[in-house]
Structures are given as C-alpha cells and as structure tokens.
Image (cartoon, rainbow, N blue to C red):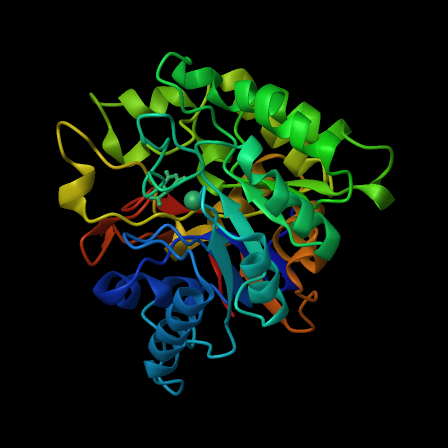
Length: 367
Ligand code: DOR
Ligand code: ZN
C-alpha cells in the first residue's frame, strides 16, 4: 500500500556539527526547522571542548543563538523555529583528559557523553578537528573505567589513523584493534559507533552481545552514507561535495549498512554528522575539508531511504526512538508530519553547499 503521509515522534540528531560564531548562526536554524528535539553536539571546534568550562560556555552560545530567532516568524523552510531544542554537549577526549573531570562534568550536566577522536604519532587526526585526539588509547583506560562506573557513553570515531592503513579499511581495522579490546575490558561501558559505513562493522554492531536487553553497543548512521557509495566522490571529476570521513565505501558496504537500518534493527539510529564547511574550504584543490552538510533536509533524506526500501514503518524508531535513553533523552510526546510532496532543496545555505542541493526530494517535512 502506498503511504503518502507519515506521523512520527519529533526526532533527535545523535551526531551534529554546528560549529561556532557566524557559521553557527547560519546552520543551527536548519536543525531547528527540522523539528529536532535536540542533538548531540560535536566538540571538535578549532578550540576543542576539552573542559567543563568550555562545554558550559559553548552551550550558552548555542542557547543564545537558538533563542535569538523570533518564534513567531516562520523559519526559512516554512515551519516555525523551535526554541525547545536541547543541545546535548560532549567532552572531547585527549591524552590529558582527567577521569575525575569527565565524571564531574557528567554529574553537573556539562556534558552527556565523551567523544573519541584518534590521532597518529605525528599528531595527524583522521578527520576535521581531530589533531588533539587520543594518540595513546591504552593510556585512556582509566577514563573508560570511570565512564563505565558512571555509565557515561563513549561516542567513538572508530577509524585507524596510521598513514599506512588503506583509506577504505580504516573502520574495520579500528574495530579489531581499538573497539573490541575496549568492549572486552569495560563490559559495562555504553558505546556508540559513530557514522558507521563498513558492512563488516555493521555486522559486528548488530551481533555483538547476547541480547537486545543487554545491548550496550549502538551505531549512528548518516543519511549520506545510506545514499551514496564511494563512486560519488568521483562524479563529474573529483567531487568534494561528497567527501567526508569516514569516506563512503564500496556499494556492498553501503547496501549492508542500509539493510540493517531499514530492516528496523534497534541498534542503529539517526545521527546526521551534518558537517558544514565554507565552500572555499571544500573546493580547495589540496586539502579539501571532509564533511557533508545534510542538516537542511535530514528528515526528508532519511525518509526517502526508508521509502525506497519499503520500510517506512521503521522510520520512526530510527529517527526518534532507538537508544535515546543513552543520551538522557525521552521519546518525544510531540509528533512531526512528513508528506509525499516533491520538494526542491536549496543549493546553498550561506556559503555552505547542501547535500543534494538543487535537486528534488520526494518527501517534505510539513509540520
Ligand atoms: O566528514 C566529517 N566531517 N567527518 C568527521 O568526522 C568530522 C566532520 C567535521 O567536523 O567536519
Ligand atoms: Zn562528526
């Protein structure tokens, strides 16, 4: 039966970059207009969020921008801007992070989770803003121990960062070398595998642990990784608009990840990893920044994926329910409505190219 309208609880973005300053003012309204109840805010600013003080100040700046929009006005995408958006802050883990500060920040509500980026011995990170990341993972075990005790989630960018690891194997190498030992050493530590792209990693997440009740390993999946494979990076020549980290993988991996997601596996949830970069930085010949900006149409993109797979019944849990409690969020009692109405997407928001910008999507978030 053809479904033309879906009503689901308002959703939650489990992985979002909103940057700071002018860029934040440009991109935050996109997520507000998408009716998110909140988002896990990534801490990889130029000056990363490594302390309670920085997390509190960043949160204040976000709330200030959020509240500066006039609620009575329609937002730029036709639905009113929402002021109840909850910015859920994260702590950027470094080799120097103190376990006590992690726990104190969690107890004071400065952050709800810890984000793990890794850097190699030369101090090169695997992605934007990760150069301050962890070089010595074993050295972080005391922090993981404290997090396990207090049930503080670890949000991991699991990609090997050594130069000699093949770009397309970074994720699975990290599963074997980094993730498995962490899970074994800290059986009570909740872990979210961020922006999962590799079919082998998806198999691992889906089958890890004994039963769903005891599950404590989950994964966020982006809309773009569900829609494009690695060929997209080369459409029409080198295509920086489709370059992100982890890099999109070969088709078999995309299909495998997508199958877990649209079959309704509860360990997978929406995290856009919407990562805006000014066009001048994205179009650099040498050193193009990684990141795809999906915030303006995230709900419509995910809906399109579930619809294509005849799986709209699983859209609501993926967007709005799966493992939200891990972040201290409830399933929203308010709903949002998505209709089968063609919608032309904006090409750019400010100077940021929008994923699939200028094309038509078959669904529209209407309220
Ligand atoms: O593509 C990405 N962009 N992946 C990340 O992990 C970071 C992000 C960013 O901050 O731009
Ligand atoms: Zn990210």
